[in-house]
Image (cartoon, rainbow, N blue to C red; front, side):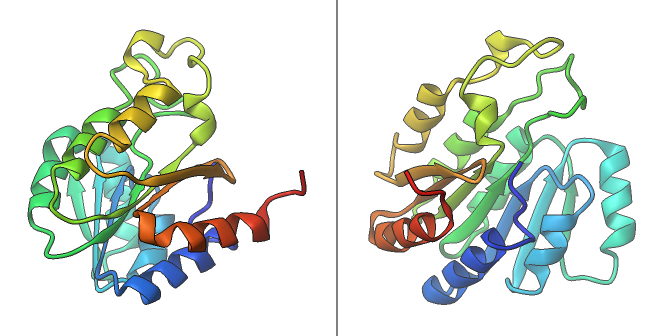
Length: 195
C-alpha cells in the first residue's frame, strides 16, 4: 500500500500542488484519516469520502479541528457531486476499494465508477490510485473477482476521456495530464530501484 503522507510520495504531492497550484484534494476511503490530515496542511480544500460509518466516525473525531470536509457515503454516489463542485484541477487519492480484510464479502471496488466521475469533469486532474497490486491479478476470496476490475479495465477507464500519462510505482498508479509527464518520470527515476 502506498503511504501518501510519508516520503517520497508526500514530497511528490507537495510538488504537484505547488507546481500546478492545485486547490483541492479529493480522497475516497478515509479510513483513519492519515492522508486526509496530511492533505489539510497543503491544500486549501480537502474532501474525503468514507463508506464505513465506524471509520468515518473515527476520522471525524481525529480531524475535528481541521478544515477537511468528511463525507459519509458511497463514493459512487458522492464523488460525482464533489467533482461537479470543483472549480479547477484537483489531486485525487483513490483508496476506497476494500482490502486487508475489510468488507471482503461486499461490492467493494468502486474504482471504475470513481474514474468515470472524474472523467466527466472539464478539468485535467491528477489521479493517484492506491494499492496498484490489487489490480494486477484477481483478488482472493472472500472478494468477488467478477466485481473487481483488472488492470486493463482500470487503465481503459482512465484513458477514456483524457490521455493521461500513467505509471505504477510504490504500489500507486500515478495518472497525470500529459504536460506533467516529465515530472512523473523524474519522480519515478528518483525512487525506483535500478533495472
